[in-house]
Amino acid sequence: MIDDNRHRILNAAARIYAQHGWRGATTRRIADEAGVNEVTLFRHFGSKESLLDQMMQVCAAARANGPTLPLVPENPQDELFEWSSAQHALITGMRSIVRQMISEAEERPRVGGCAADGPAAAAGELRDYMVRLRRAGIIADHVPPVEATAAATMLMGALFADAMNRDLMTTMFPQSVDESLRAYVRIFLRGVGALPEQVADDSRSATRSTTLTSVSE
Image (cartoon, rainbow, N blue to C red; front, side, top):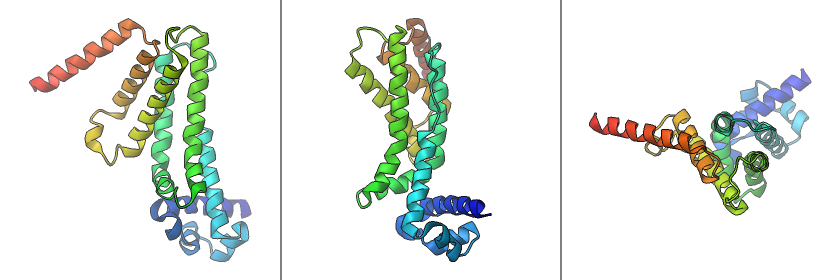
């Protein structure tokens, strides 16, 4: 029961924080949401600050232990699409909390640090995968490391921006999530010279065909 209460309180703290931010996440609101009294909350966590700090650590750990890429690359386009889809879903599921963290980062730097833990872990996973791609001869030799790193940053930025803003800025994301993620991956792979030219030609032809069809309608 003790562990169950702790788990419920942490989950309730995440939901209340996502809705109301640090100041609005009162211990009474959190206790009511968890179905416990404030005495139980304080017995487990001691203070609101300690509770929210532990809640954010749990959220950061969930992002840091996100999806992984294969140790032996075989089909980068499919592998990166599956990874990107999982990352996008993870960010989307946590975006309310992340938005609160970002809005409070200047006032509470530790909160901003928690918000950055997940993206940093994902970026590290992608960079390690790119090392494996280069060793396998999939990334073109003529692509300098600085440009490959920039391409990875752009892919991460596209995933984060899409997941965080798709519900708010609908005109910026007219394609479906799957269509957008496949496009981000193709652009990334083309940028590092790892997309077979035939695949690139086919994707461009498909895009032109879709555009022409939309215009004619």
